[in-house]
Length: 138
Image (spheres, rainbow, N blue to C red):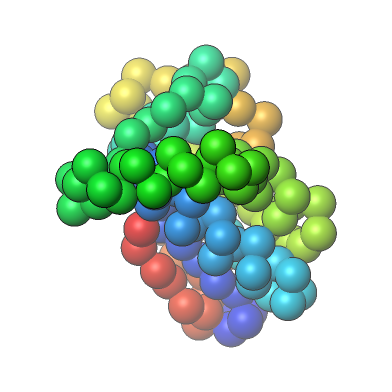
């Protein structure tokens, strides 16, 4: 078991939280730290291939000001969370897995997901792969 692996449980599907997950992933990948994302619920929903490039809004705590700031960053040319994750996968060891239970809940099949998603696994497989490394929830 790799104690250096960073595992992110991504269960929120808003752009601000997805961006946070993407930035953490890219930073760890740039430092040659293996990263695993485990997509659950609305985080998984954002990775549908027909929805991945849509605006997913911001979390309620961001409020209108937070939303305006996110839009300003995008207008200024900041990479989207999707672009950041694609770049992270190019520079480091990044694996993205969909939660099998969330797949069932949302009525999804693997072909419904964007190619960024590497596969589908259950929670037990997630914990085995996480080993003794950090687990963060977003």
